[in-house]
Length: 301
Image (cartoon, rainbow, N blue to C red; front, side, top):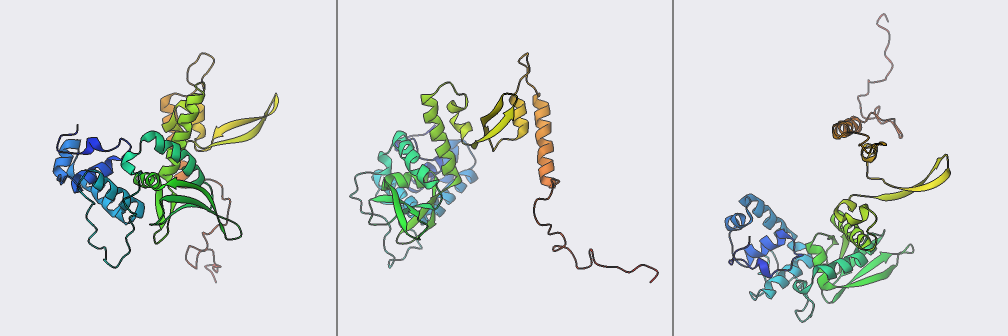
């Protein structure tokens, strides 16, 4: 429960908890122990969140967003980093832009994420932003070495993506480039699954966005007594989990929970032991001593 000593209630709901803790610590001056008591966790946990958020200030979009939240609280901009030189060109845009990260809502971010993250998930695609640009551009590298602009997004939305760790700075500089992260790909799957679930309530997997982020759907053709047919399957799922979902004619599970757990442990041990057949070059002779496998004379010679 937040107390009156914090401005966390004025932050948008989409803001990650680690960023809230960082702003409460830097803007409000709340100590790590006070934040830990408020959140009901250990002070070291809060310290890790604050330090990680501080280490991300080298990211231009993250730095701009944190500075914007500092100004939105009426406290002025967040103080500059100690290691920032006066000779360095400022990376924060002019404050005259109307759209701010604090003015965004979850619906707007989800709508823009479906459009932009889907583009960034494609090969040879990145997001570029410069200090004098009000919008960020999604660019794709063409086979001939050129680039093509695929989409544009408001700078505040791109800042929200960076705060939520959906994109990461690939190359800082005058024109900073970003690429989608694993967290961003999972968020894209959740958003797509939630929207598909709203349109088709009949599919069980369509109304489970958090489960859908771990699924990787593919199609293949199988043949049975009725002829060839195409089926959809999850490549990220083990065969044991598939058998665990099946039921017999009486409606009872084909495999009990104990058998599924034991089979999964056996599968993990088999994969860790690397007992499967070799499908590539055998490098054992190159990684062992020179005498292994070499000719040795008989003991009587």
